[in-house]
Length: 212
Image 1: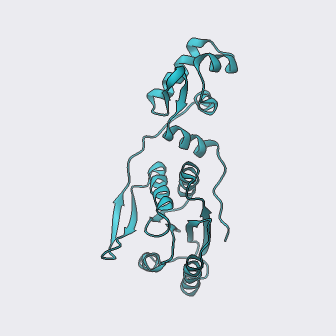
Image 2: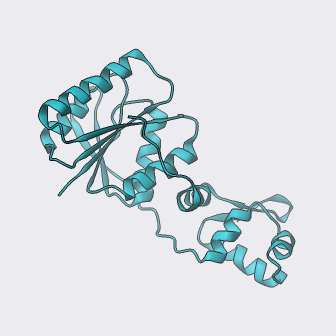
């Protein structure tokens, strides 16, 4: 069965090459290298080294580079989650690259339901399996998703925009609060939680992109 390597990458490609070598490469496999939009000569050299290694082992393996902005945490988690969920047998490594991207990839694995990711320690160079956090599975109705998209809002705002009664609007908002996707802030305004915002981006946002 084909597999997909998804790994953050910085200046050093050695741990990822070792992981790829141990797991093996088959025709149809794909490797996604997640790195910063801010290019650096050492990172570009690391990318070239991986491409050369892969071409020498199995030229039928596709290597793609995904460049993300470190500060776009929510977008990155959502995009990487969708990438993981659409991948066949994902193998995830968070060793290299900027910490913001490693953190995003780890949380993306949690949202995507992956049970573990790999990381190579900096001191001993040993690979460890990092268990992910279990994120509840959220089932949203079309109306609940619509409400989530309209936040932040008050009960009266939602009632007017959706042309529903205030009691129905209140019930919809409370249902999202119970799911941990929204909270009631000051001024009786309902806001999406971080989980709610990421889930919304996963469900309605754009696809992740690869440039190579």
